[in-house]
Image 1 (cartoon, rainbow, N blue to C red):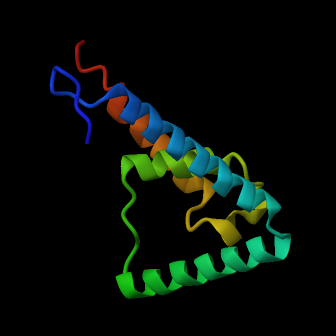
Image 2: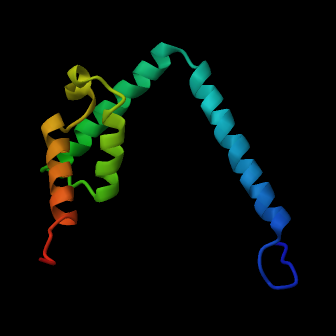
Length: 112
């Protein structure tokens, strides 16, 4: 690895690494856009089946972290609620409960 005078990383190396990641991500996006709908549907079915198998092995309800909840809430806006049972393991009421709990923890008004 190249180092500059101060002992830090070389700026050229960082830029090349960033450019490499950007090109790689753009190419992966292009491959997804070019793929057929059948291929995407098959991949979704495989991932759903894997998800079901992992839930059976877990034996209980999955524990969602704060980042997981945020991600699922953001994605839930992109899918019509009629299709939620097919896609998500959570219901709209669960997302609303998460939001109520978040607001309740944030706004306790204990300073009064």
